Length: 634
Image 1 (spheres, rainbow, N blue to C red):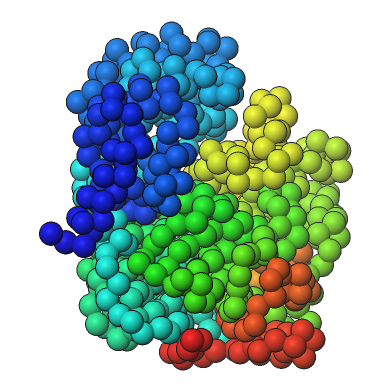
Image 2 (cartoon, rainbow, N blue to C red; image 1 turned 180 degrees about the vertical axis):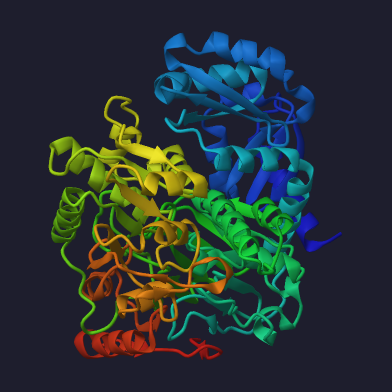
């Protein structure tokens, strides 16, 4: 009998001691980080509200109780019973039954009515039909991406359960080494922006944090070295994603091409956006006649292997590593990833990308942790002069450009990442138009911006509280303003470019490809129109070249160029990244203060400047690592 089976046998004995005799336990198993208890008496479990808490306290594990599939009421009868149990005012829009987990997802306009006082209605549902209800609010904009992801997980439920059981056994295996050390190896993202990838290793475990691409390039992280996949794909215990932007996640599906078959940990919106952004990148790559590094099947593999976590949940991901995700304030579902290693041995936090202050979309990054000895910190705006314009000043400048361009009968084209900054701009423009600060005009949302917006409205709990309230007030939802018009296809762009004055939000933010190229083909020669450049432009991208004064743009079919006669303006202050002051504030107010800081994800000068400032001003040991360097901390 394996060590894990012996553990489960002991756990089963404890469960039998705690659970009343009238409740039958049919199976106990590990599925991912959770201990799952299957019972033939889910209704009895539901009546005993404290039982799960007592078991979790006794076993010191995350516990999920699921009904044995044999005792579930058939979905057609269960749906009828659920609709009878829930008052009509809840406005149920959809019931989605998941036989693999025994859960029924209930979408409703008023989730609180479904839940009932102190969860009374939920307990009633379980008692009547056996299914465990999970309640979500019906999103005001339905997302095809979210639905496709959920459908995939439903279709592949048997394979997914196999994956989770295998992961669970790996997490709870017997330790194999008495040595103690903690190391971080830099696979990418050092003294550069893009291809973020880091290996966190101990004698027991290896965890890959992020696996991104380089904007406008086919460079990849150094995955072939022995610390990564050079010694075999499944020497990696887990992949942890800070967020879904492609410079952090764009090559995650490639891992499955290498043969990786393990878990990916992230928030739920990061999982869905990973699917949206990587599939869009595949379409763009193949549309430009280039060979992508993986196909859509590998994206499906990545989603099937994802285990989603909530902010603040402490989760075992390896025998000697616990993971906690904290809000990074950068993008939907973005996370500062905190690793607790060993029995109090060492703690490491990876910032991913952070925004320290509140924005219209998100609250600022969390920087309070139980312990942190080493912080791996982004440095995108870490240079000594990288101070962002005040957000109010930035908004004022953008609105001035909109008014001036409108008065010339021109169009404002804003290259913008589809996820995060586009939604921020939508809020700014909607508020200005509603207040009469800019004239009414169409705001064209190109590419996947509308779909990304739908994903945002699906996960309102990740947004600012005041925005969350507005989203579910149909008359006040800013994302449903009449001015917003989704655009799809070059025929639409050509017609709209010759139409009335308007505003265009078009991916991508660094002008490396995508819909913004099409708009520039149609409008680059129009001196009455404006190209508004926002945020960071990585070295080597067309966006950086435009900022540096290029006026012949290589974006036409067949390799020809177009002449840029548009007015080009830079509007700083809209970045989803903290500026130099924000990065220093994040570290200065961090509780507890780290002992060491590794400055990554920035140009060479930015990482070195930030490293030097943190050393001199805050008396910290700091480093500006190079790719392929390894740091040992214990």
